[in-house]
Length: 514
Image (cartoon, rainbow, N blue to C red; front, side, top):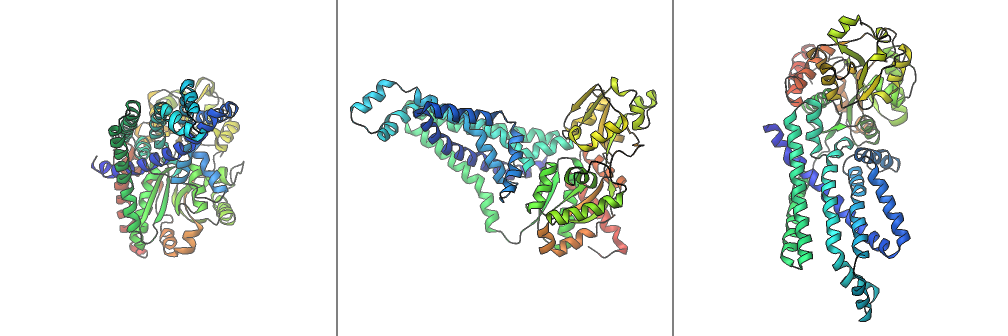
């Protein structure tokens, strides 16, 4: 818990920065649009329809779509900017709708009286309509505030630090204290911001300046507190850190921590980890230079980046083709293979495998129509699943997508019969699951490989040299034990990575010291 509490201030500050910036932008866009919409009903219907359409897009999808859009126009594609744009769009509707409602609900007699005393349209708006509509408008801002605080937790997969880091990593590593801490902090922040905005609403309704001033002062203090860490980092800014990406599962958290320790020990350079990135987000971020290095898997790249429909003929061919493609297409360097494979695999409860006589994937075909299969969020849309399904003629009764951290528990509890496991996941042995043999070779090899950005190759050859010394140094049993230590024994990924670093350094007696 102490480690989590040490992380909380930085994640909370980043979360507040995102929320306040997005709200400020949403207000500055929605108010003038709402005023124009209230004046022109046809425009109003169109604007509100567009804002409502944006609201129907799932929050995570809205944030994720910002990544390729920004990359296509040459802007920073991960981190603060895509999260800011997504959150701003999500906050428009309640403010816009309440602005239109508030202005159109002003008593016509008041408007007519303003005209009667000779006010111009601008004076009438500023002195009569907006003051009378402001309580309704501020109520819309309150709604947008609570929505934005919750939505900001989803900014983690696009590389923007937030309280979502605690939630996502906690879910994946079964550290429920982390999940509860992140969730509680987000809830308290939502209540605090809602209370401050409510103070403004009360002051406007009762025409008292004191609550308005106190609430605005509270918001200003909160903004200053959130910006203080960033300002301190700017003042201390020196050499750019090596930015290490990680996807959203335990193995990636451990490997990103290990690489950070290894690079720091080998080169003395500062490092920074961007964890819980989406799979394609991580690759796009590397291609654009927003991150410098991360670990990917040859089978994933073969299927999703090279878009090859059939498995490669062998492991060496896959690595050679991937290395050539990523270098020629994006300037990315395949630095090394770490020495283990983490492949997609189908797993079943051991007692069911024994009872039904299932040892290979091919044995599933006769039983699949009465079984359910669970997979991670992307599995059933991936080429690997289509290849396995079609090669073996598998037709399950139900296909259920779920968070990968819950998938193993679902299998152990009997909620699903088969899962799309990862071959180095320690929970396979811990929950008495059995991996089925891919006897027809439908699943491509999944060597864990280190990828580096063009910038890192060009500007930091010492880092590349250090990373190359990891080639072949981590076997599947070591990785499986590391994953099990996090998932089943509750150890922090950083602590597990520290142990791996010490083992690697101790085993390097015949190699140049890193």
